[in-house]
Length: 177
Ligand code: HEM
Image 1 (cartoon, helix red, strand yellow):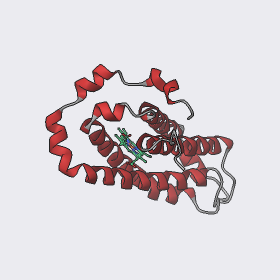
Image 2 (image 1 turned 60 degrees about the vertical axis):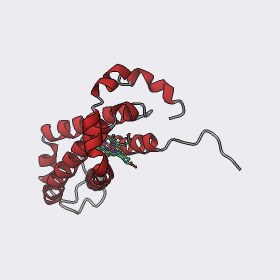
Image 3 (image 1 turned 45 degrees about the horizontal axis):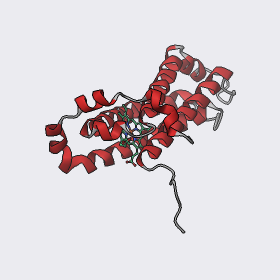
């Protein structure tokens, strides 16, 4: 993450950002912006905690915990919390597209989010969750495929959170002593 300019090719063009800026929406949201940000952070934390727990289980942690009931509990939670994070994230973006779009890792964060969703969808489609739940005995170690998906997912979502944090506050350029 040393040189943010290396990500210039990913940036949303400024004329697009300017065109997306709609001041009536900005002024209407102004009194509630802090609440939207608060909800974004809360839902993001709830989503990240849930997906990290599932990923760690796929990686082989606590293999005695049956996967099927665990996944039944956690997947609706992930849909809900991710949905709220996306809606509030979009609301934050449209509040000030030029400012948000100028953040060094904003588009990288979106790209990683798309990859995280694609990874989860591919895993779901390939029916591995069902296959794992049917594993006998319950304490059998997850397949290489499941571990790989868990590791990729954990890495992607961690990177999303890191990019988001760096967008809000980057490493200092100068330290005053
Ligand atoms: C379409 C999806 C999303 C959009 C459009 C979005 C957009 C935003 C925006 C505009 C901000 C304000 C800071 C900035 O300018 O970057 C923000 C903050 C943040 N987002 Fe997202 N976000 C999305 C999804 C997510 C997801 C899935 C996560 C984590 C799993 C996440 C984690 C965060 C974090 C940690 C912050 C920093 C909050 C703060 O300290 O102010 N976002 N997001």
